[in-house]
Length: 141
Image 1 (tube, rainbow, N blue to C red):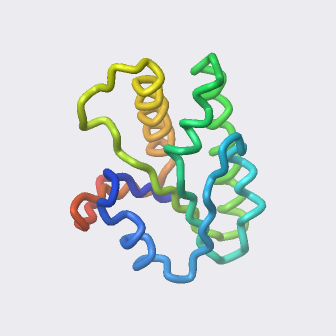
Image 2 (cartoon, rainbow, N blue to C red):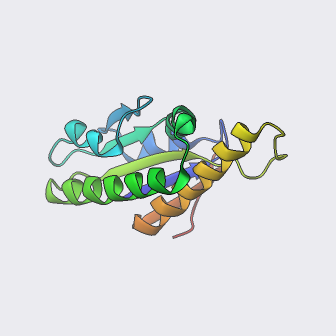
């Protein structure tokens, strides 16, 4: 798996499109399990997963962080395994939201926490992690 992470409008989509012009793009739907993305996998074809922040925002109704995190960790492992079996490169595009002012509303702070944990978990499983800022792409793992 590869993770492309950076701020809003930083050039992540352009960077991914340039590297994987034949990719299938899949937008995570609110409430969708991450492992359900396996249905979008096609042998020998890159799959790009987007809309992680919006997907996490929909998960704010879940009262417990730990079970939610355990669920997506397991889902991510199974998704990566299936992508490897199909020789289908897996790419996740995620937003960096931790560099700004901490918002006052508790749900917005929690969203940033969830996003940070997701990024850590994706980084742990990723073979490569790319940081994108101002259209510049830097390999950080």
